[in-house]
Image (tube, rainbow, N blue to C red; front, side):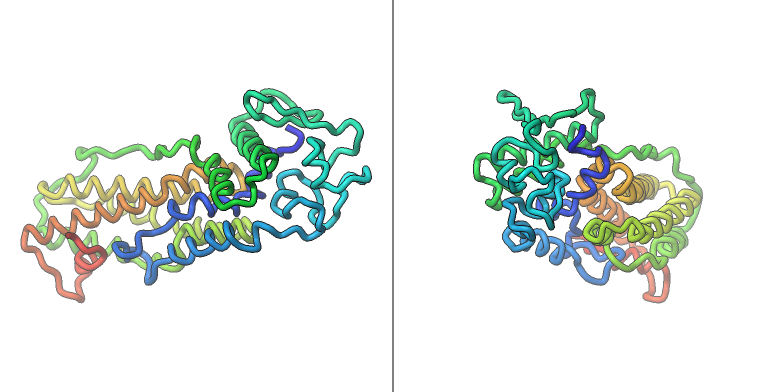
Length: 329
């Protein structure tokens, strides 16, 4: 597809995804204290609101009738009012169903009236999955612009909703069963201290969603090294937890913890694909909050297990971490 370079297209506009994904990539601050001193979701949501209603979405540096972020979609120059040099401003060409990056007269767009799909001269057929999604996004954008709805907050949210609605959200991590857990005649408190010591290892810093957002805003793949470190830390925890011997009556809770940690680890790894395969990254964004909540519930299950069995920990013991990380109602 001549106007969409598969991966680079979605990467270039993915920062705008915060409008539709802000609620999906945020921690639930009033319940989650795992790995974070403060709740970053307020700032993430604030940025989304600022974009949807603020100056960022309406910046037109060259005053050619195309917002700068629209220029990214077309591949036109946000600092040049007539990118293809054919004597017509970029915005005027788009409004006239012409390409701003192909000099006229052979620059007419093809718009399928029944599907709304937009094609440019020289566009190839048989697009891959990322190109299909990008094409659907582009067609929705073009329709909103032609109907004068692009300036509205609702229009923008509908536009970015396209990026999420057809993205698969299942986690590819292989689920673990109860019989995958090592079981033995182990003291509950000893078990709790071993698990607490593993889970309380330092893995703090910025929230994973905020790291991803910053990398996309900066368009800097190096920022994703922070995500890589986070995923590695979670993976080490998971490996060590698989080697822990659990009491027979804690098997179900231990398996839930292993699965939750495995799924979150895979999700963070998928976030790392932001500049390689945006569709994989978007899938991870769509399921991120669910995976975080699942981990919280798993930790809450262990909390309840020790509470119900009258197992207590001193504040200096590793197991105390399990009794303070969440509040069980």
